[in-house]
Image 1: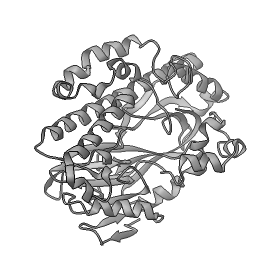
Image 2: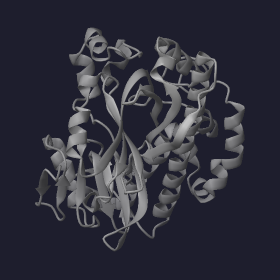
Image 3: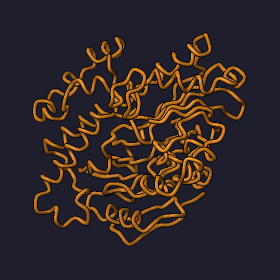
Image 4: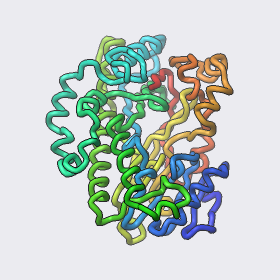
Length: 407
């Protein structure tokens, strides 16, 4: 579908692909559109909803400045998906066994489960992760940032122990079936504690550097870092590293998940085709409209014509494997998922475990109050989101989950 609405009252317009824009999100979009360094227009995806400073589900192109809070604290959060040489009949009747095996194989949540400690990190870091860390350690990748900001890591061991772990909230690992009953594994996570530490530090640093100008902003979380400053360069390096960390995190989780599936089925599953991996909390240097820009995608994925992507629904709905159309009006972007339509607290207050069980029927997953904030009814209808962005992506596969492990 084409753009649903164009808001013209800011310094630059906002192109809105959603038909359910709430007042808070509208105000946040206008706040961003009035910033002096935003280029051409802001794009609001069909899954748009209010966030910290900037809405989740937005694409913000900027020149010579970036907004750390617009990237957020889960830098590089995103998705990975693989198709397996397995058919539905290969996993029939094994959903609960598969869920239990994955929960044991991949540290997750805030409880003491499987190989995890009480913060969802490794008790004993696997040798493969130790080897990777020794080769790609943050000290070697970001010497200047560490030299100037040694508190970024908090504790080095936390970053190592979080690598290959799921985290909490809306992060998940799913086993799904596509329209031909082929088996897929889809997972969602990001840069864990170290990314949070980096994001939090630079959000605060941007506020400090704004000085008295901060009082003139409609929202302190829109404080920016100016290109040419030391903090700007440090932040660009830190974001690039966190995005790499997030991608490596997903890769190690996928390896552990496939090994868990192999243990249940008695044979290692083979991957068919390429691994699909996409960030949806990112900042990239890109060329658009004959300009070199910083493109911040906050809850949005890059969707050039060459890009494959993953757009998940809630734990009881469908997910989509897509190819971008390269739509220039969104700076080659699309929605990153269903998007929340109510807060976590409201969802936990409004629904019961009976509702959760009914809405996740047919999916092997936790069905307790501990995941009530992730109940499908707390999210937008993924089919409507996809219908609203038919100009932005081409649907390649429709997946329906049979197993969901929540963080």
